[in-house]
Length: 134
Image (cartoon, rainbow, N blue to C red; front, side):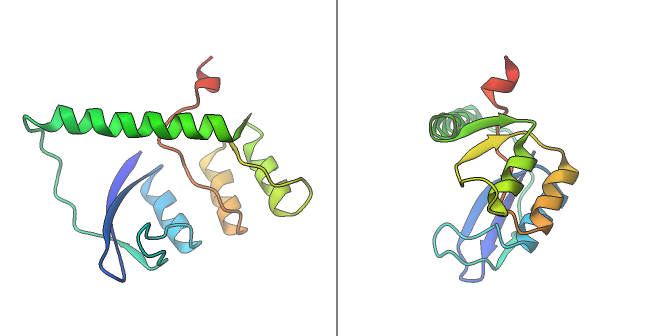
């Protein structure tokens, strides 16, 4: 996972996590990275200072961990885990072969790129599924 500082054309600054630098590029190219404040799809990487641990750093890490845990709970409560069938199920929904529902699961980077290239809206999550860990 990689975190980028981002900036939209309106000057709004925000951060987001991505599976990799190439995943970021693919998501931006396909229009799946937008500003949360204004909705602009014109998003670029902003200058980001290197991370330096400070005395207050554990509190920030705790807050980030709390936010990711909250996100995980929302995803697991509101979406269906499809495991390794994610790519096929996402493609089937996109092509109208299956009803659209919220899903999450696993797929390879190559499969994720192929989905994005075909216009299927997917994004990496900043956590591993509890289902997969069992």
